[in-house]
Image (cartoon, rainbow, N blue to C red; front, side, top):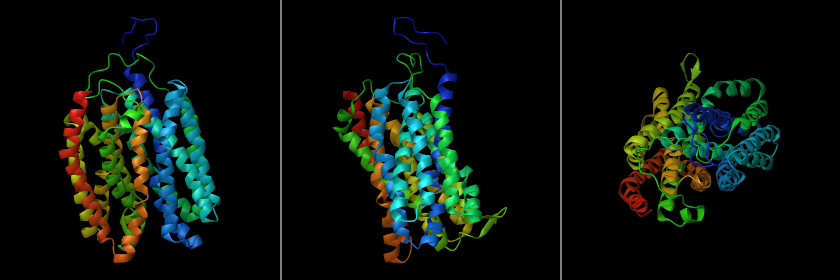
Length: 425
């Protein structure tokens, strides 16, 4: 690679080695915080058995975690961008590593719901700091392959828990859920803290010479206030809430659903139970969906990819509700749900940065990411619907309909609206 030398402030053009090194470090950090969300379902029933707290009250801790993980990200993103390319990302990820470790350690000692909720607050704050910073890194380092880069980064979060599902269940079974919280929190948080010091954002001029993207991107950068004043942003927000809510219901409830379907402890493959196998498949599918659909969107466009993914998602929810009572059916159709849900974390950040530019990308995509926090408070409604109807059927009907509505919005509202916005910009 050559260097830019037209001005005194010009910097060396980023090499592929530099870009991929930064991306890989962020992916590893995402893998290490994945259990905060995707491993949570393993702890729900043990906590219920140990303390007798209702499932709804325990799941409220999950809602708090998701809310704090998302709603604080605009502040964390603003701090990252304000501190600059060299200091902002590393300091924020180091802070996040400390907080995610501390959050699970608090959970290990929690003898009251209040203490459990405190652990969710601390862990959610740290998880959001790591997540938002790493996604912001991806959209800045890879403008030419933004969907793929964000997808790979988000895949670390979606698939990372697959590596530790069996170890966590083993620790819970042999030493109790408290030991699992303590040791996994300590190890994961510590490694994130160490890796943080390798991270930086691109210097000014460093992205010169990167290949042009195949999808249309904004020629200017919009400030957070400008982005918030556009109909495009709020349409993306509503769509994000609808798809995220349906996926979070499955994420948080997969173990109770398996129990109610009487398939959770059925041994299927190499001694693994239906639930263990489903969780592994779910995490792999959830992670794989993000780069897969991100890569597709880099070639055919964001809206067409949304329609494809969310349309398949609506079908998947219906199939799990209808055919999930068979052990292999449960594994396959739960996996299909995660395959067609996880891509929201690559498609929406990519669409946001394509539309509003890169200068304020971390803040803007963090503002959009708060939609996940808003959707989290719909998760306990799944328990309410199930309790009132006596089955999970209406939960699956509702989530399927939500996905089909988003398909229509992507094709017939978002696509023309965003095209007009980019043309004016």
